[in-house]
Image (cartoon, rainbow, N blue to C red; front, side, top):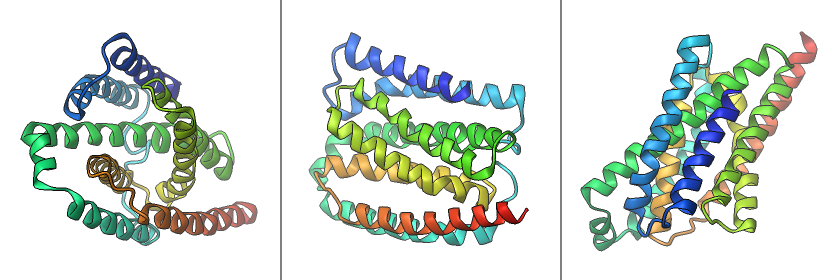
Length: 238
């Protein structure tokens, strides 16, 4: 229900901003419009956790540092992408954003990452594990995360582009679900997700489609297969 409520808030907010109102004409206006929507969604998530569970139960336990090793390749790819985008960004592009725009970018993308990780790799995944086998719970988390990105269609994004984004989000969720379990704490995922969102938006500003994004996806796919196979094997052994 938390995932449904979160999706509904984002969908209604997106429809209001991009359909009922005039479509934002700049990145800064779009981020400013989305900020209160994300604040409401995150507040709802926090209220659910405090009222019905606790932060440790939804994925904020002790960090298992050995699990972070599986996450390291994705951080390396993200760092390479960031370096490439930084080189492509001109002073004029950054001046166009301004200090206020950069602050909005940082805050709004953090709220997006925080909310989505709590919902899909926190409440949903941890709750599903109590009722389903671990692989089934991870698949439900990944599938829900992918389908959630259909809300971008409301913002006027093309059907084919949205379909690709849904597929990409599913594959990312397929990778992050076992990582969340292995690491035992959502903060590393939240921070990676945050920086990824920033990289995607700044890449659009700089008109850069970085080839390392596909490389990162391929690496994540290989790691995902290994982690899923290991978890399925351990599940059968138990």
